[in-house]
Each structure stands twice: as C-alpha cells, then as structure tokens.
Length: 103
Image (tube, rainbow, N blue to C red; front, side):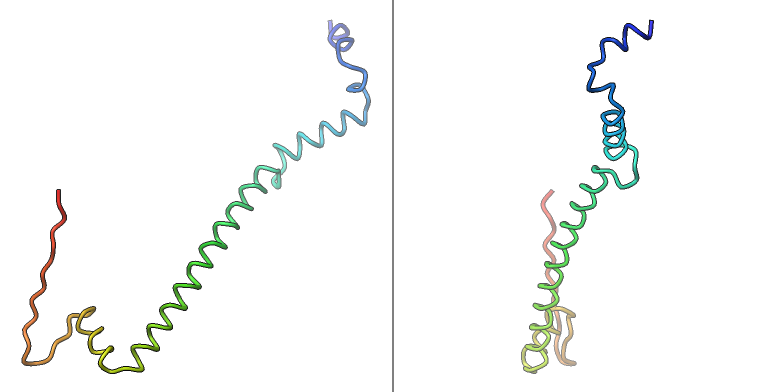
C-alpha cells in the first residue's frame, strides 16, 4: 500500500538532500521561534517605532523652541499662562465659554 504512494513521488524528492532542504524550509517558515513571519512582523514593528521616534523628536524640538520663546519674553509668558492655565490678576474676572459638542 505504501509502496504505490512512494512510486508516485518524483525521484528528486526521494533524494535525502531534497528532503533535508524541504525539512529545513518548513522549520524556518513555520516552526522556529525566529521564523520568516516573526521576522517580518518585527521589521514592521521596528519601522513603526522609528516613525514614532521621528515624530516625538520633532515634537520635543518644537516644544523646546516654544519654551525658549516663552522664557525670553515676559508678555508672551503672561499671555500663555492666562490662556492655558486661566491665571488672572487680583482685580480681574474670568469668563470661560465652553462649546458643547453637537449630538
């Protein structure tokens, strides 16, 4: 019974080197911890992390520029504090208008 199936197998597949190569490829494609699929996912994750790193480096640079601008000019610092943190002088009254989202 097994012999009739074995006779149908091409001769190049009966070679031990071919069997070893096929076994190695199956091992590398599916079984091994460092298979090709895992390597592809890791390279995609690395690319995403590098893009995020670039974004954060730009954000840090912009924030540092803004900080230097605020620390260099007292009028801009006061305006920033009033707008962002709702700071006021003793004789002032602040009215905060909040827009409600449309539903």
